[in-house]
Image 1 (cartoon, rainbow, N blue to C red):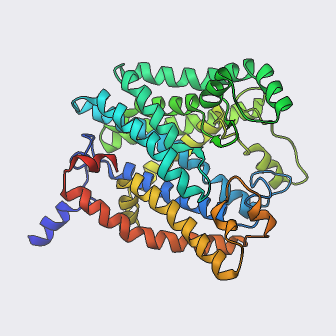
Image 2 (cartoon, rainbow, N blue to C red; image 1 turned 90 degrees about the horizontal axis):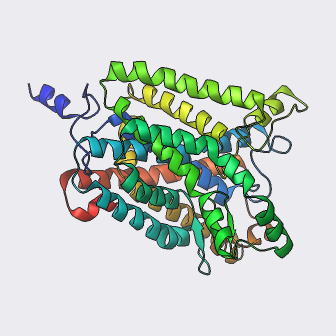
Image 3 (tube, rainbow, N blue to C red; image 1 turned 135 degrees about the horizontal axis):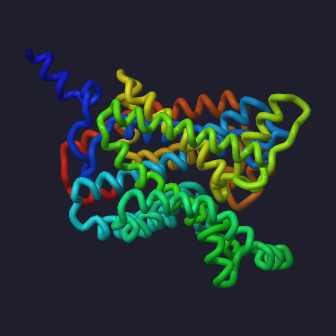
Length: 414
């Protein structure tokens, strides 16, 4: 009887969603595991950034210069940002459906907190050098949450339509506003400086603002992804069999839509594909999708795969599932920890191997990594990845247990 009681308390053997999250959303293990999986994949991407010889020397998804292992290592990490933002939208819908009080105020405060972290703790973690701002996925989620404080008041189907509309129409706006702005930048050799150019950079066209702000995640297309998650939120609240019956054709439809748009090749992604010297390189060209900003092709492909992964993870059990749950239930904590772990590990390696200190401290805005011939092959990158995951696991499990035991208000922001 005691054994049965313990099994019934185990979130990994619960046949139905168990309880609520701290923010008042249903607790679906597969959502947490999917979030944890993409965190693990993201660690691989940043391990490559810090330790791979070619990280700053070539585009890993360039079909003409990359190779299969490097291409796959980079391409799989495309799933991360799209999945994070999409699941944030699903979570917001769950909170609304569960009647979370003052949801708009919570989203405003949560979004502002994420932006603050992005421009301080996280930006410094990526570059131990002079002050500069690196606007990435946490920034995009934060601003999108602030927008959702109003949008979430709408019915889910309206938000879904809004997300699709933004996703499919924003490339036209991007193209229509490109001419004069791009000519001005080309002539000046600097990033965005005037007000309209800065707004366009932050909302539509990733780039540099001034000389020290790297705005890689334009908000508008990522807001569209969050709206899609919110709009599909009602399906995730169904029982497992009904959920699978609804999500499977959606995932297949997204992938089919991606293939169709890519074959047409006149709309959906600004980078056309072409026939290459080998079938493999042709496939690499076909799959070389634009992430900055995310094109409709990029979103359809990554979300289609993410939904399939969610359905597969519903059956996952055992120690791997427990680690993914811990990562997925402490996403911001784990995200920040992995940045500092990787960068400090690089710093230790630089000092141990006799490279100049600037190799590890001023990574993003300088050419010192290339000038000092820093970097290793992919086997070292994967070894670092595994090492950091092993170090993260006990930390995430510990913090996940704290969040499960306690209800301090500040834990909602980590």
